[in-house]
View: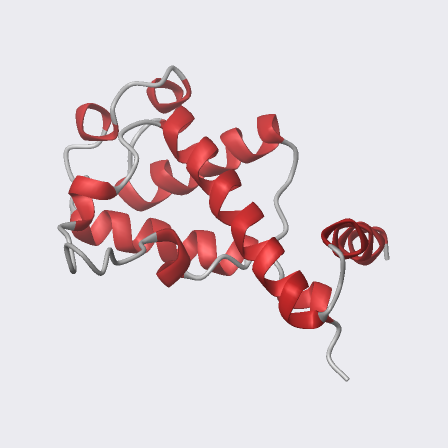
Length: 131
């Protein structure tokens, strides 16, 4: 049987998450991470910050933190598909907050599907990280 906690997002502490997300964007966009850490808008820091850069960033977030791109870019059934740059966070603080919200939402959903209490699921993730 697959461990339900292994499918769930796993985020580091907020300060580490902030640094790692800045490094991801800096790597994808080939820019300096320092202005990102100062909450400069992504489009002001990276001249190549376009929908492709957003997609590459989302794929790296998916790979590193186990948050699927579909969860990071939900489609509003009332509006339909939207331009990704229009709905993607504009700076690092917004991206950190949004990533945490999405991870929490996914964790709750996966815990419910696995029949686990969210607290039990969190404890299982912590044990898995320590192993």
